[in-house]
Length: 145
Image (cartoon, rainbow, N blue to C red; front, side):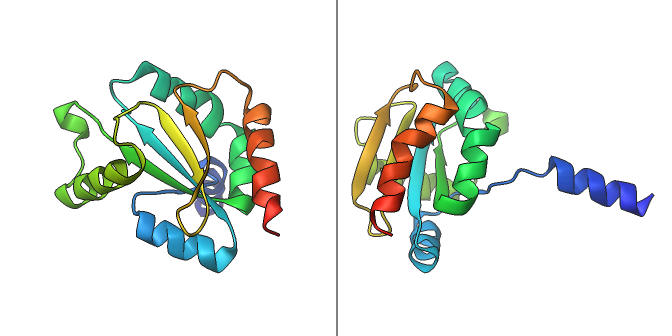
């Protein structure tokens, strides 16, 4: 029974982790020589945000690529009371938005280097396949190697 439980956990755990702290992400990106994807999302109210997450960011194609090449950061701005974040996370998300998303666009996704330099942006839902999304990132991820 323990083996079955362990197998279940391994098979159904997400293969990538989305961080909520850009400082942690930049440290990890520098250490691992990776780029950072920052995704601004309204997880409980923004239809295009939900679609982006489900169709691209949670796809096997993107997650497989991200695991080896990217550090992921999500700045979520939920509206429903039941989905509210703790005060420290709200403050981190607002600071990140002040720097990278002052116009409050949702969804808004950026590819930045370990120093925070913006390399590419996606404003709104990128109407493309997960494979094309990864293909847009890949040359930039390999440029510094």
